[in-house]
Every structure is written in C-alpha cells, then in structure tokens.
Length: 80
Image (cartoon, rainbow, N blue to C red):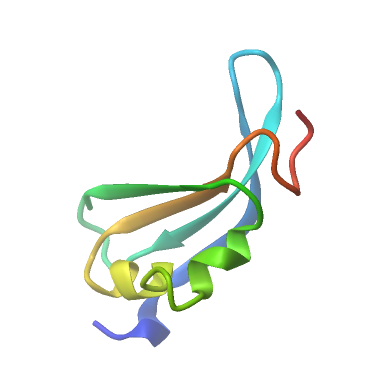
C-alpha cells in the first residue's frame, strides 16, 4: 500500500457530549477490512502533525491504520 492509496476526509465535525463540534481529519487506509485506529490529539493546529515532530498521518494510513487527527478544545478550528 502506498501513500497515494490513502483517502482523507478533512474537517469532519465530531460532536462531543456537551454539543461542541471538534474538527477532525480522518485518514483511511485503502482496504475494506477492519483496521486498528490511531487517535492523534494536538493542542493547536492539525497541520502540526505534518511536521518533522510526528510521522505524517498518511504514513500510518498506508500501513493500514485508520487515523483520526483532531485538535483539543482550546485550539483553532473548533467551537468550544
């Protein structure tokens, strides 16, 4: 599987119990089989996951992980 096989959904609103919507990017591996999931939570911008501090979420998806990348409540791109 290669990085070009990864499907990305950007800025998906994920509802929290209190009604707050948190923006989440979801990286899907190119498989129809169930995949283990990784949740990456960042304090500021989701784009930080694309720096040299972390492996890019698409890399994990290419290894057949589903990756949900979201920011915490006090970050940007959120409503609470």
